[in-house]
Amino acid sequence: MRAWIGIFLMLLLFPLSGQAEQREFSMTIDEVAIEVAPGFVNKVFAFNGQVPGPLIHVKEGDELTIHVTNNTTLAHTMHWHGVNQVGTWHSDGVPDVTQPQIEPGETYTYQFVVDRPGSLWYHCHVNVWEHVATRGMWGPLVVDPKKPSALEKKVTKDVIMMMSTWESAYADSYGKGGGPQDMPDFFSVNAKAFPYSQPVRVKKGDVVRFRLYGAGDEQHQMHLHGHDQLTAFKDGYALPTPYFVDTVPVGPGERYDEIVTMNNPGLFIFHDHVDKHMSNKGAMLGGPVTIIEYDETVRDDWYAWKNKEYDADFFYSESMKKGYGLFNHAPFQGRPVDQRRRRGQQ
Ligand SMILES: [Cu+2]
Image 1 (cartoon, rainbow, N blue to C red):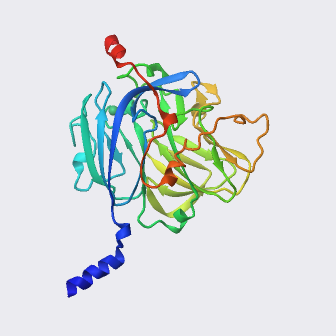
Image 2 (image 1 turned 90 degrees about the vertical axis):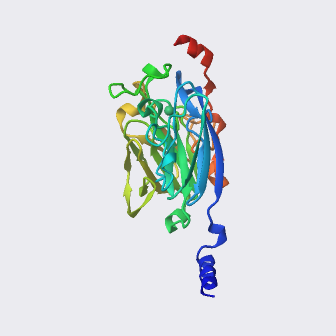
């Protein structure tokens, strides 16, 4: 009798709808070339052929099974940054520590529970200084909480911004670059530098959750004009006392979630305040730049992005509305690299 009462109480406390789901995904790693800035093409190792990698959007407590197939000519692994891998350390993705490298042609299966919510991400853990810092091996893993806070419930739009670095000296040379003596000279948001980046379109009254990621090798000082940024999460963790800033430092590996109430119609830039980062190899204006465009604001003829072709899912805002799953984004796809030619050159 007592056991039945216990089961009844558990069902009351943990309704079936809130139970963890099992989700299975497959990803490839491919050799493609992407155009980061006008005239600047970088060869990358790309998850599902795109940079950023596909959005993985799941719920706290879900059990994930992810098959990763390496179609490239070098070895890789996958690290799930922010997942603690409790009891599943073989899925932590550190080569020669938790698994052998995934060699060309091989598949490795990762299985784990996403044990905490927030803006997590995934990246390669082999030769990180090249593969992550200059070859685009990163993507977002967004884990919704079982119980969203009052602040999170106010959010009307998610905007995922992954800042990163590039080295044009090695753009064409797989296996090189990323060393501490090397100098990044292109900088981007979601692998595009201004003017190839995209605006964030909002309407007055929106509450935007900017999920800022440091996916490259330098710290980005992200400054939003015209609005207060409420820093509410660090590395996915809810801060006990959220605080307002106008510039947030996002270093390598870090994530900050900024909650912004859109209450000031106009056109406002959101940019990196490190001067070097605001150029494309020294030519101003470039780098990780977006512009907040209110729907109700009239664009003047002289506006830099007046005739820009708009990509509504550039920041995965549309994909984030579609529920749970893995979401590719075709405009992030690169051009396949000819591997036969590459092997012949080496
Ligand atoms: Cu790699």
